[in-house]
Image 1 (tube, rainbow, N blue to C red):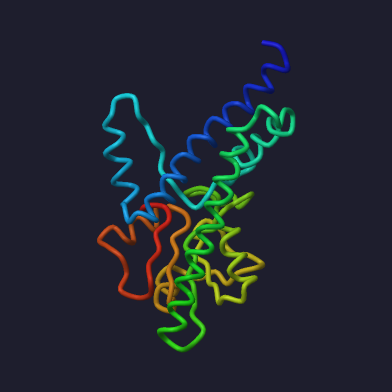
Image 2: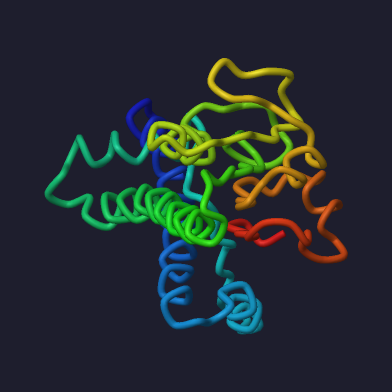
Length: 208
């Protein structure tokens, strides 16, 4: 095809994915407010032969899906309304995760009368990679740290990070008052296959 169509195709692919993820993330917000298990809901809805809802998460990251839709919005803001809204929904999901963890920290502080520690499980922008670009998990951990919260991070795919104390999973769980699962790394799935840990308040944002 011609060059404009080829360029538009790349932006379209990633915008399509962003819109579909936004639907799942928005469902997770609605379900959280209504006390409904969003993953059970999606499992049931996906039994319909023409329904294929994706899984919600911490937000959307990476150097493509989190970026490319903005080119379409910038090129025609009057008509790229759904694409813009999807971007806003996915960005807001990360803010909602931060606020949810913050409330858990406040509850832990009231319960223990000391400064709680949060274990952030995962920093990469998607499972089982070492890429942190545009990562919503990274945004969550940084935001909590900026708010003065004691944060440790578990990221099995990198050796070190300048902003965080990286620890192994056992050490993180042993010292945490709040455990926030931000990325569905296979190590976390395996570790919690038999259930949640006994220590700390456990917040699973990725459905492990």
